[in-house]
Image 1 (cartoon, rainbow, N blue to C red):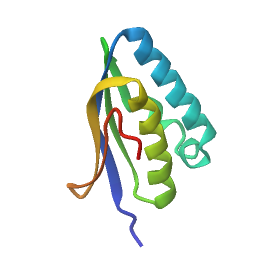
Image 2: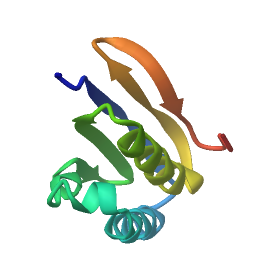
Image 3: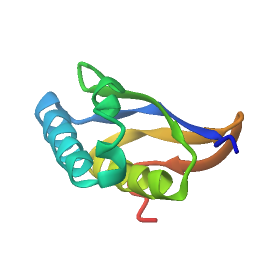
Image 4: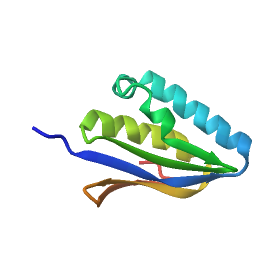
Length: 105
């Protein structure tokens, strides 16, 4: 059985670089605590690109429930201190979720 892939892509903008750095450190610590994400052998660390106060996210994961749940927690951590932006989750080009600052879901 082939597992679908879920792609998370988008950007978050932060008030300043220090806030972005803290958010990224918190997200990386959270990734290290998630067995499902650690098993992906650090792939997450290559999926965050910083430019000024903007964080760009581009990651593809197996669309397994445990990965989706863990990813949602990571994006909640990242978006908590962001001032704008969104990361969308898609499967086969169909949007299945969205993570925006101020979203408490």
